[in-house]
Length: 220
Ligand SMILES: Nc1ncnc2c1ncn2[C@@H]1O[C@H](COP(=O)(O)OP(=O)(O)OP(=O)(O)O)[C@@H](O)[C@H]1O
Ligand SMILES: [Mg+2]
Image 1: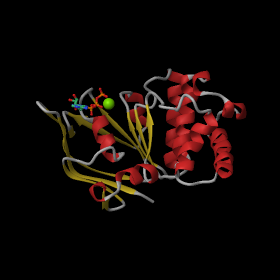
Image 2: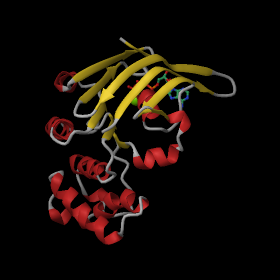
Image 3: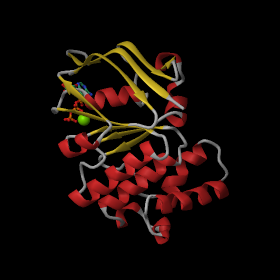
């Protein structure tokens, strides 16, 4: 079981001429078995915060702690491979791999044998409600809602207990939004994942266990 803690996290984007303080002292705790929505206006720092939790970078100051260990002290690529799974608005599936191969990829990265990865992928395809024949299709041959299911299946195959999603329903219609969000809620409540979802959708925010709001880099 993972716990996630942000302690006075600040993050400054620096280029040669400018710096932007995108996150300004955020503290929060995220527990397994719950779905957290992170809401707030465009530019309020939601994606930046999620990126820090995903281990794409470490905070400029403060700490992101996973099971009590600061990401500052970790090998970040190992952390990204083993501790957190991320789902994006634009799915980010590998276009030249089939659905099954997309789902198998992170498992193979972790050293799981191809035959076991293939079996597990078939299970996950069923679990996210895709038909069996989807396994051998390329992502481009699926609808947006189906592609997002593949992205979720791939994330589940990583065997982490934290799922981070940045506007996972941003490209979906109302019906698929409801289905995907329902699936994320089940993953938190039935399977014990810690799910953190960035969303602009107030309806989804209202269905989350905990709704965090950001304004200008801070939690309000
Ligand atoms: N790569 C970057 N370099 C410099 N500044 C950046 C970079 N990415 C984001 N920012 C700035 O950091 C702030 C927070 O951006 P962030 O992407 O975290 O916002 P957001 O809440 O996810 O917005 P949105 O809802 O539009 O996705 C913004 O002021 C943005 O301009
Ligand atoms: Mg964003």
